[in-house]
Length: 149
Image (cartoon, rainbow, N blue to C red):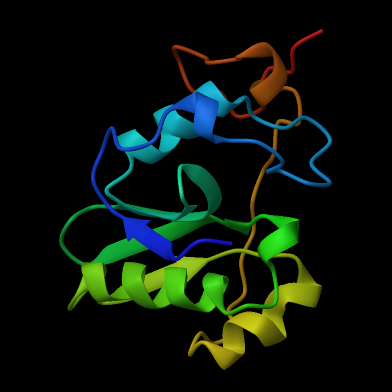
């Protein structure tokens, strides 16, 4: 492992640098989709070992009071080294005086985030498990999402 570096600019990562991410996802995004998501996010931090992406985190925000962290991932070969905590620290620093920084996670991940200063909140969500794989994007929001065949 070379020295890790952290990048925050758009366009610093290409899909060719991404391999082995989204472990356990039933319908993982493609490397192209990940780059598009990260480059389109309000804030982002990539962790790189040489040219290889080994972790990332992003935030979407209204730019005034609220931000949401949809993705934090560290490559399995790099977990347990503090990279995830450093990604969170760097992203939260970028968010500055934002009033609310929220995220949703699986219940078993709550203790991890609590160690990083997050508190438990109630929440709800809706997921379209096929949207990543088949690119569903409705022009008009509906009460019930359209699932692809």
